[in-house]
Image (cartoon, rainbow, N blue to C red; front, side, top):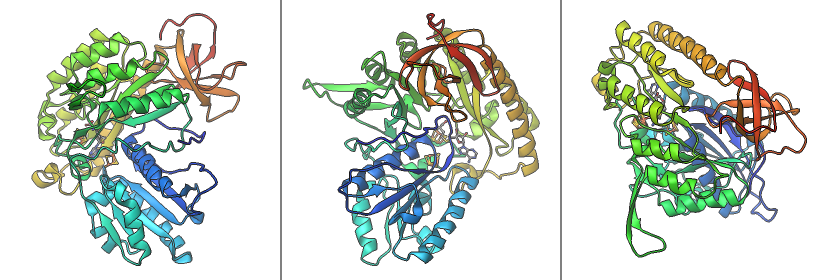
Length: 482
Ligand code: SAH
Ligand code: SF4
Ligand code: F3S
């Protein structure tokens, strides 16, 4: 496996258009792959699987699409603007293809799955369309394109987890990495396109998850984030690798197994679902110092009526009960959320309930969205998208403002404390500063100190903060917070 030292962004549900590059050994087939990814962390993890499959075919990756033989765009369908960005980018690749007709342009991921062969009709420059469960077929599909045909495979699978494929770590910092533990989603949130683009939920063999985590740790990685659309419903049944016994592993047990690899390996995970997160998971987090005290628990709305229309299968009271459980079992746990403004029929009272839920929880961080109707979803079929854009915008602005205030308040609570930080590298703004995250996922920036290297844990005394970052310096004393 190969790594390249570059920035590795986390905590961004809808990352956009980052080119992923990796240096390969010199004996290759001379062909170059450019792959650009949009959407959630799972899509970025998939691009690492795709790179691995093509790497085995002799491809190298490049960060410049103008020198590529194959350009892949790994797409997201979650909101209309995510799709629009991909369309705009495709027209740029079209210009390149007119210059270099041999260039192969492929659309991968959720938009490929949603639009299927329509993509080939609508975007003439696209040669190949591949859904998220068909990446093993990429070599054959590329051969088909080379023989002068358009190629498509958008079959969804009930089994595919790419468990045996070792991802090529793209744009990594060599310290933090993502591990997919499951694919698909069996929930049917009425606003959401994911069940249609990613198919049925399936859990990956825990032996392969543990092997991947252990391999990363052996190669110097210090943090893994376990990924799934709903990690709490992780469930795997099968044979134990060592003993000839049937075993069943749930998410809490998987977390514990990964945590036991080493106390020096930090564990994060995303996304938790309010209906499925159990006290067992919370006690497991509390029990292991190296499982980070941070839970992303999207609420979507604070109104039980809207939650019902969203088919989230929990109520405001249920969500509050889960928050109370987190606060009592893991007292210093950071909590973040996803919130949608302006879902169908949302009244001013419903909106106020979202704001009061934000007050109740005091989220450390939140991703906030304006409702975007997605074709084919339950909501698109059953309800009118009846909240005017202006109103959605106003409500979103109110949610954002509240979140900014709460995020600042949460960060200020860290000021005056010493905490353990995993150094991820130099800060984006200055190479004289290091950056890293605390256990609660807050970014901490501090002057580079002699003898301190990326990948080490250091104790940092935080003396001030901005609206998004903690600032401080390395100290010798023991941390008050791990
Ligand atoms: N599996 C995760 C969410 C994945 S999608 C979960 O259940 O929480 C990430 C976020 O995008 C969602 O939590 C939701 O807030 C937002 N989202 C999904 N569909 C949307 C839509 N149609 N309009 C606006 N936001 C949407
Ligand atoms: Fe979409 Fe709901 Fe599944 Fe999340 S849990 S991916 S919001 S259907
Ligand atoms: Fe987007 Fe697909 Fe992820 S729709 S958010 S890339 S699962």
